[in-house]
Image (tube, rainbow, N blue to C red; front, side, top):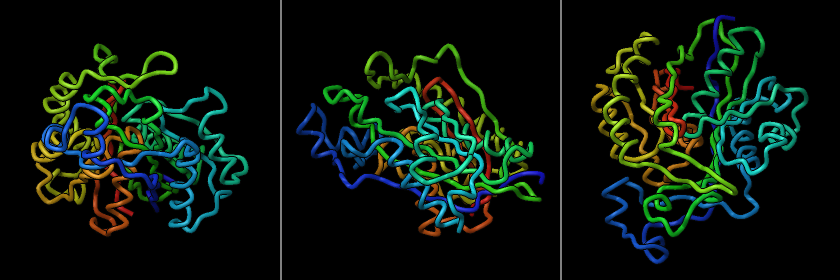
Length: 312
């Protein structure tokens, strides 16, 4: 085999919806303030017993069902997360146990908001190298475990959930080469530090970097995949801020693409944001099957990773 292709997606979000109006009773903020700065209207909040691995398993089960595969068919499992409470066992091992998998390679990836696209790239590499034939890549986060609900600059952003994709070996590659990297001098710009840890960020610094540097890097992703921006059928960026997503898509020149705006209803779910947004677009059939879709994650680290896939 010379590559891989995405054959199915799935996502899971908790039932509880936290609105801007409810947040305004908890902290000094307002619906207008939140919408004007980040574009978020609602977000999903996990219950106490909805752990990272539990949400990951729910999304994975849906993706596997959509692919017509059994958990035992998977030989490579990646969970991207930065909100696992325990150091060991990792989330991938727990997800494998929940799903009844047999002998998958099971690894976690922690590059925060770009974790899913990093994980997708490593799964594609494993398949290209012949080390795997069917892979499951999950982004799952419970950011509310690490949120300071008295800090209006961060608590208005976060949401919980999980998304997953299934990749299989393919004669013709439908997952393009990854473009990835980091900005070490900004590694502290988005962070969860200390014990038990609290989410914090230098919001203005990240916003300036994202709006000035990301369009150039996103164009490189398209070039490496041999896809012109105007030919993209979809653009799914990390759902951090609507004021980053919309200008970036415009500056990229993706004039014919459906642009994911799931941040409006789901908030920032870190590594889960791209697969959740992608799964919803596929579920609603807003992107044609086979159309090229740009997936681009960026954030904590400060790390980034982008690639173009064909829509399942």
